[in-house]
Image (cartoon, rainbow, N blue to C red; front, side, top):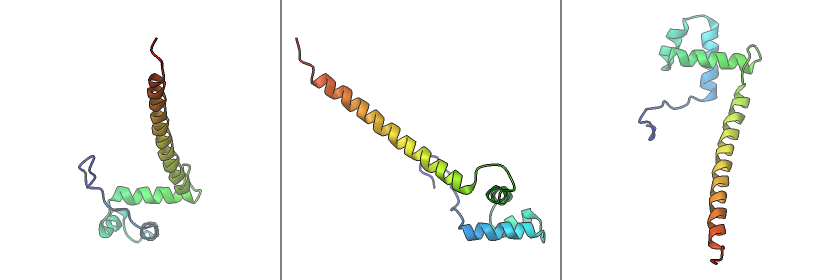
Length: 103
């Protein structure tokens, strides 16, 4: 359970599971909804995997999985740098006040 929201988030499925699920859905042997139910995932989840696979293969516009991963990492790094910058600003202001000589 996510401590911040109190919402149960399903565990991420391995890439091979996703790949095989997408292949099965694309085979057209069964409806996407039935395949998703049989695999224990939502239909929207399977359709999202299918769309992402289209982007990764260049058949559709959008961010590839690698680009999406890089974006997440860059955003995380930006947050860390912003926090570090804020800490340095506060420390600098604190030490500047401490070093001022009274008149």
